[in-house]
Amino acid sequence: MIDLRSDTVTRPVAAMKQAMMDAEVGDDVMGEDPTVRHLESMVADLLGKEGAVFACSGTQSNQMGLRAHCVPGDELLINATGHIGIFECGGPAALSGITVRQIEAPKGMLSVADLEDKPRVDDQHYCRTRLVCLENTTNIAGGFVYSLGQLQDVSGWAWSQGLKMHLDGARFFNATVAGGYTPAELAACFDTISICFSKGLGCPMGSILAGSQEEVRLARRARKMFGGAMRQSGMMAAAAVYALENHVDRMQQDHDNAQRLATLLAQIDGVAADPAATESNLVFFEIDPELGTAVQLSAALRERGVLIGPMGGQKLRAATHLDVAESDISVVAEAVADCVTSGFAEQALVGSGPYSK
Ligand SMILES: *Cc1c(COP(=O)(O)O)cnc(C)c1O
Image 1 (cartoon, rainbow, N blue to C red):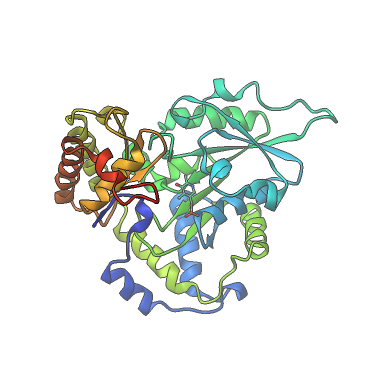
Image 2 (cartoon, rainbow, N blue to C red):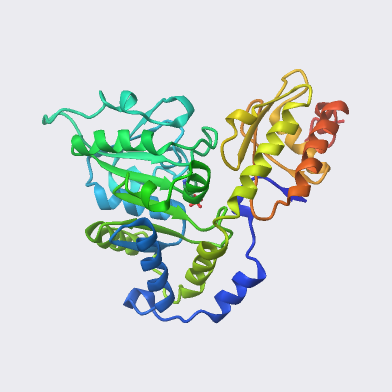
């Protein structure tokens, strides 16, 4: 199977497993795991922040960040397609009493123009607008990459309004590699930053939140409350250290593969894909409704050894990553072309449920 459903499906390479086996560990809740400490200071240094705290998942590190900035009754502003507002099961409200204000914006990228009329005035009727959350790269909005200038504009404005800035950097290094800026340049536009280790970086689990000493202190407390304080987590931190040392620069290969896939898909009749709008490792494409639905195409691709997730309606998303080889790309495009020419919608009906013949 060639699995393009997500960059979360990567499995640890042998050298990463060895680094995990060799990790020096201790009880991290007691502050005694040297490998976790090393990872946290490594990320803080790389991002130019005062500190960082290792977490179980990207969802958890985002929620820890929100908690560090907000009190119940506060409001955050986010792009309407943002993970924090859609895919974290109401965490801001459930865990921190935060109201989420989702803002429609082209490409899921917020600009000052989208934001400037949003902060509430200081009046007893209103919640306090406290935080702006951006995603870089964007996820379901299209895998887009902010330029440094765009980010500096937003953060300059937000800070002038007394707002805080949080980056959902699940794909932080896809952004730095594709955007051509350094981790510290990107991080300088935010108060707190979350980064996933379990996506393109190829770790089995883990995430980290970076910020000021005070924000990290509050986030560490939130992590404990959210059930994410771990003990001998140095084994997992060792995977993250390995990934930071070995798996960042190679992301360019994932972006090249995505570009090539978008180019090949765009050549298939009945498939709409746009290489120019493919900026990182996520390839979004649509299937002509005359041919069938995204769910049907996904099922037909599975029969051909290719896993690609349907996004509802006509849209699918293919994520390239560490476990997808350059040579897989033409195989994937050929599978899509074969589905289209062989009438995949009819095939998908066979055995699809109680009403099939
Ligand atoms: C994957 C992802 C996360 C974290 O999700 P987990 O399921 O907790 O790993 C957060 N934000 C974005 C944009 C993501 O793509």
